[in-house]
Length: 106
Image 1 (tube, helix red, strand yellow):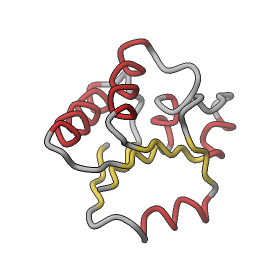
Image 2 (cartoon, one colour):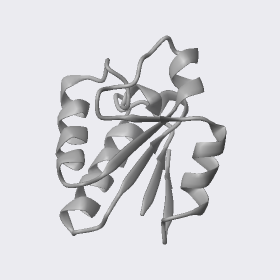
Image 3 (cartoon, helix red, strand yellow):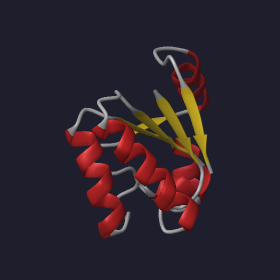
């Protein structure tokens, strides 16, 4: 299952999206988080402690975290150590292959 995130993890919508991802992973779903726009902060080396803790827990459960490289650059961020940076072609590939469900989380 792919969850497309677009809100900063510091916003109510971003925190809710992380709760959803945590619940789905806890229920045994294989997840890919795709961080776009302001959600690029989650996949960066500057994510807050609380957001980083949730992301680390998800990654330890086997989730993947993709972040659009252009969104990182536009915000002056660098990818975190456990984050995979993708370009637009990689994003399209992630959205169209290997996932039986895609969820958009504002």
